[in-house]
Amino acid sequence: MNPESLTASAAINFGLAFIVLSLFSILKKQPSNASIFYARRLSKRQQVHFEQSFTLSRFLPSVAWIPRAFRVTEDEILDFGGLDALIVIRLFKFGIYFFGFCSLIGLVVLLPINFGDQDEQSIIYHSMDPFTISNISAGSNRLWVHFTCLWLISFYGLYLLYKEYDEISVKRVQLLRNLRHRPDQFNVLVRQVPFCNEHNAYGCSVDHFFSKYHPNSYCSYQMIHDGKNIEDLMHQAKSVARKIEGLRGRFTVKKCDKESLLLDVSQEDDVKIALFEEKLQEIVHKIRQLQNESMMKGKELPVAFVTFKSRHGAALVSQTQQHSHPLIWITEMAPEPRDVSWRSLEIPFRILPLCKIGAIVAASLLTIFFAVPVTAVQGIAKLEKLKKWFPPAMAMELM
Image 1 (cartoon, rainbow, N blue to C red):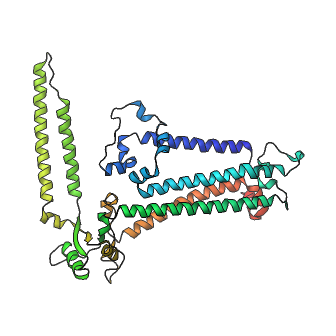
Image 2 (tube, rainbow, N blue to C red):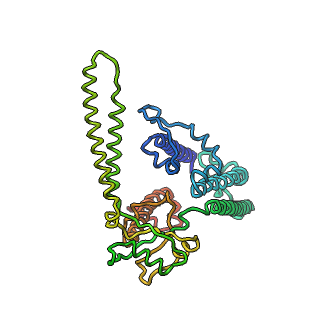
Image 3 (tube, helix red, strand yellow):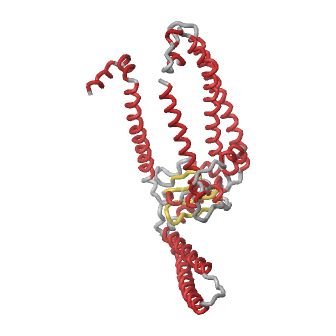
């Protein structure tokens, strides 16, 4: 590799890093992205302040968040991001420590060793080869320095892995102790509940099954309902409520010469507000009708959250097969309340494996289509060495 290629590679990496950081800084300022960048704050009902007005500063990158990010402690990350976020941060710190140590060893020890094992007449100033291991002659004692450095780097990497695993394990145990009374630890998610023909519902099947086979630990259950209609009506109600607030806030009575015109506008707005309020009452009435017990029973899904009296009972049910038929009464531990994906609960269980297979195939195709061009480019760049070590590569010259 020559210095120009190394400089170009460094410039590309720094340029991409600058673009990514700039996009992050701009996107996190947009109110529409609050659910992505401030999901945990919103789940805790905390307010997130944005610049509501359309200003230029919203679309300019800033670096003020970078010093604040370095001042955040691990306890704060654990509090507002959770254990998974802390593990990701520790993974980046592990990479910085490890590659920083490798760079230090390379610059302080290996680079002088490699550069010193040559004659002054053979120095080529337009190439980086004098700084690599290829500059050391065969059988040289300097190779033992490389061998020792490899062992040193390996042991340091193992030490970092052991240290990170030990500290994360301690934090995980502490987190579990602090969250001993979480309700999701007493709940089990049950899929593929059989339909009760006698009562024309799924709920009675859940109650009869767990009362019969788990009488000592079973407590209660909650069926999941198809709430698409209610969700659509809720969106309509929110939209109408926003329109009413907009009409009330837009019109302000001011003293001026055109009082008659203001009076006409006020009457028009009052009529619109009355119509919207009437529409809102109709939507609320429809929602209450859909929330009726008889209506909700017809919207039941074959999915339920079952509550147990102890964590042991919930864990026992979630980790054992409940029926001889493997595709009914499928149990798993209930997710945390903020992690529940209600839309995924509506997907039939038999389709979930197909979704997983589709995701694996998509990831495999992405990896293949990424690896093939990269391999081809690297192969062309190292064609001379390939022809030496792999003679069939000479056929590429004929193409």
